[in-house]
Length: 272
Image (cartoon, rainbow, N blue to C red):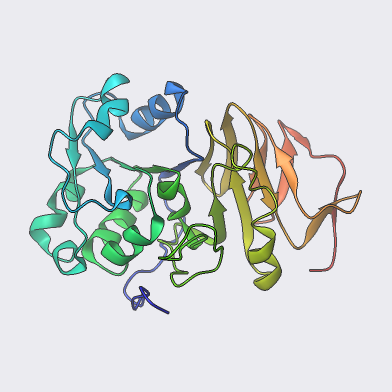
């Protein structure tokens, strides 16, 4: 489909040492960005912010959208942007990522990120950061691109769940991520994807809420809820998804959830 690139050279490394932080939009809670800054190494850590999902042709080095990072104390932030995959595949362009310990990907339309970076040196450099123990984070579209399946990736409208761009960066394998979940009444939308592709795990993230992934475990942080869509599990009332709140976890290998440190009650396995 349109926008898909050959991904043979971009492979998920074994057991990445880094952290993923996917935020469902909003960002009223500075603690989520403080967490990203902490995982990257503190206020002097070299950070890269990627605003490409916004779709503008140019973002200046002092682009105002990085103010949230500056407000939580970041002192070393580089804005990296192109809409041209040929530029993204040059060593000169990717140089800031070679030294970065953290990356923040902002919102807009996720297909812009796919068009510009899939299969390029930027994509590989992001994997390198994740492999060596850095942090990759994003909000809204910047959260969705972290999964392997690109929900709402259609170039015409963001209401089409399975559109003309279906490949994400793949940091979370066999995962589709949606955002603005409860704030925009989207909590049934991911069902379309997991019904069509039952091997996928759907993760819906509300605003001011995040998933933090490290060592194969997802933990919820923030204000409201994350919704899990797993064709192999159901609440015993027959629902096709369940909610996790702050402090709840999900083992991404076994897909077994826990409420804090206790196994989540009322979740049963079922035939996909």
